[in-house]
Amino acid sequence: MPGEGTDVEVWILGSSGGQSAKAAGARGLRFAANYHVSPATVLDVRRKSGAG
Image 1 (cartoon, rainbow, N blue to C red):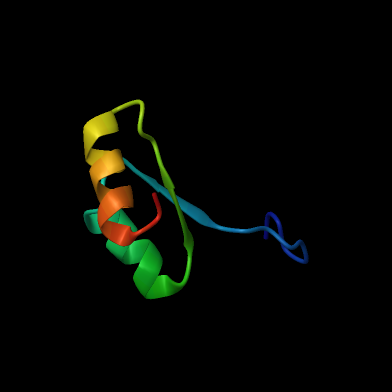
Image 2 (image 1 turned 90 degrees about the horizontal axis):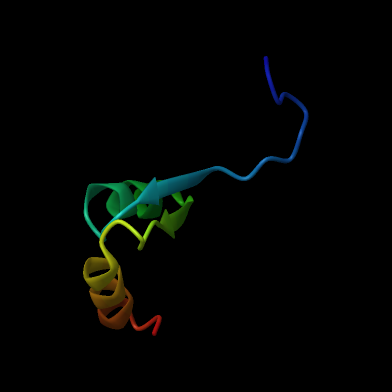
């Protein structure tokens, strides 16, 4: 199995606070926002979450 025995963090990449962010949160995974695709959407999600 590739990566077996390593301490690799799994991240989910998405462009909004939609399905990808919800999936990451439900599974306790980190979420990376690719704001270069949709900057206004990501910044709005950050404001609503209290992260900035």
